[in-house]
View (cartoon, one colour):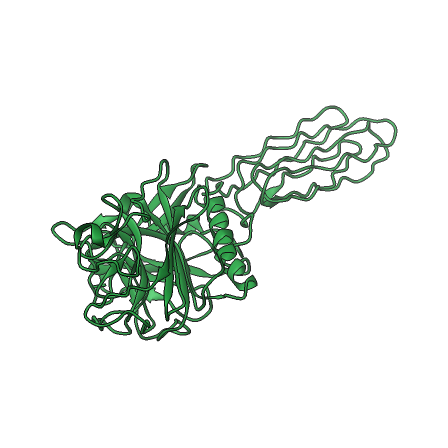
Amino acid sequence: MSGSTGSGTAGHPSGSAGTASGTAGTLGAGGTSAGIAGSTNGSAGTLGASGTANTGSAGSTNGGAGGAPGSAGSNSGGNAGHAGSTTTGGAAGTGGAGKGGAGGAGAGGASGAAGAGGGAQTSTPPGDIAAAAGTPMVAAHSVTRALFAAYNGKLFQVRRPTDGKTQDISTASAGGFVDLTSLNTFCANTTCTVVRLYDQAGNGNDMFQNTTASQPTVDFWTSSNGTKYPIIVSKGYQWLRNRTAVKKIPTGSSPQTEYFVVHGAYAGRAAGTNGCCYDYGNMENHIGDDGPGTMSALYFGDATDWTRGAGAGPWVMLDMENGVFAGGGPIAILNAGNASVNANDPSLKYPGLNIVTGLAKTDGTKNFAIKYGNASTGALSTAWNGSLPTNKNPTSYIPLQQQGGISLGEGGDGSAMGTGAFSEGAIIAAQTSDATDDAIQANLTSIYK
């Protein structure tokens, strides 16, 4: 239808050496580091022949990952161990206090620069969950993070309107989050647009938009720890697509699973339109309406020309062309009042961040399911699990006749009157198990909070 914690540079304090005569110094205690993402190395002191025992105390870093103890030694006026440096997610370094033979104090470390984007994820990401279950992703898109623990590459490309230059934005580390420092530096004091959304699954299923006026914009949501992560915002008539240069996207009546993470506050429609269609996923291999079952893309919005859920929306639904579906079976397709309503598909507006998980899967020949949930907490719920639509409009939806093009922010015929904001999504060329769906949702709630 038609940052985590900022990346700080720790200080490198050095204790001033003091001197005194006396017995041989003893080896100082090792420096320590605490936190997530950094390492510390105290500089070794050399054993002297005189001076009182001293301890070179390594500076600590807050926010680094698994720093190893530094070995700091001291003798006659030994030097303090160097403060640990943070690689990702570090905060300001604290200088170690050197204790010389006559009592020289080490200088404090300098404050780390404010940064963004953090270290590795703390649980298995969705791409690895799906692969381990034997249902690997064939397309994987995110502006938040790597969807595979081993992925260390490009997430999306942005365009700066002030000079027309573009830049790829990648992960900050393998299996990690978006490099916010790179994004914030390039897009400082302006609103960038999105030119390309890269496929992490290795199939080249990127989506792109070369027409500047039709490029979605970059906005941000703020996590509970204060880090601002990017989202792709479509305000109507803004989309990304790839209808022909695709690989392994399901076609015909092949099974499929899709999920996405979208932001409820942005869901709606361009003024004076029916809101068709803020979609993500599988659609025609060209810009056109080829009839029932020729697409199977997730939808989030409040369009009511076809079927709908309870209340006024927005709802997670499945766009199967010539109809956006909250449910299947005998549901009336063309807005026939209550006959077009699936009361088990609720309007979604979650407290707090209001970030939505939508998931749909189908065997392609008979049945499909729609699930929804709060991406910040809790489990998925099922809105529909049953037959594909049995009514015709004008031809049958059974079996599906998917064509394997992909888009974000538009329907199969190019209708782009819906609004929305996207964080991540994926397409799987198989029906996932409920256990896999649950594991993916559990991972999402560890990220979008």
